[in-house]
Amino acid sequence: MGDRRFECRSVIVTGAGHGIGQAYAEAFAREGASVTIADIDGAAAEAAAKRIDGALAVATDVADEASVQAMVAAAVDRFGGVDVLVNNAGLHMGQYNLTSTLPLEDWRRLFDVNVFGCVLCARYCRQPMIQRGGGVILNQSSNSSYLGVGAYSISKLALNGLTLSLAQELAADNIRVVGIAPGMVGSDAVLSRLEDVHKQAVLGGQLVKRWGRLEDLIGMVLLLCSGEASFMTGQTVTVDGGFVKRI
Image (cartoon, rainbow, N blue to C red):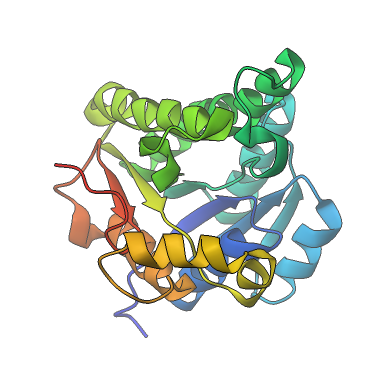
């Protein structure tokens, strides 16, 4: 299947032991990629890797520089380099919706993972990408980055800024840097926890009157990381059914 978009490409997806990250990893594999599944939960990474032929699982704390360096080195050793990095690992929900009352240590942990972890992964993937003639870094943001709801939103707004800054810094290396800012994905698990009033608020605020699907995100991620988006960098694309209205 020579027409698959990521044939002979090495792709790292962080936070891919479960959920959206795992779905991304499986989608890249279907498109021909050799996939490295990085997750702080090593057992989850191993289990996810068993679902993908030839995938590499690496227990990785993206907030720890030595751990990130070792993960990238393992990917390079197994697959010969890195072509695509998907910075998906992140903290969210619960106390991270707070702002002034969130303890400072929680603020620091949130930024260590959601922002600085992406910096570290980009730092250590840069040289392997240069050696392959370039690459793509995709940062997983959120539409809440434009909504100002707590510390989580602020971390994702910072990540949008990082996407632009890295795009400018790495352009000379032929490395594109893009982001995706999803809205709510209406999975069974999410909908079962959501009160009716919140469901009505989300659907009422969207212009597309249906729940977001994992496939909506996967399609955009594959597009942004492929040659079809080769003239695009420094942008974060909102995929939320039109919930956020901005020019």
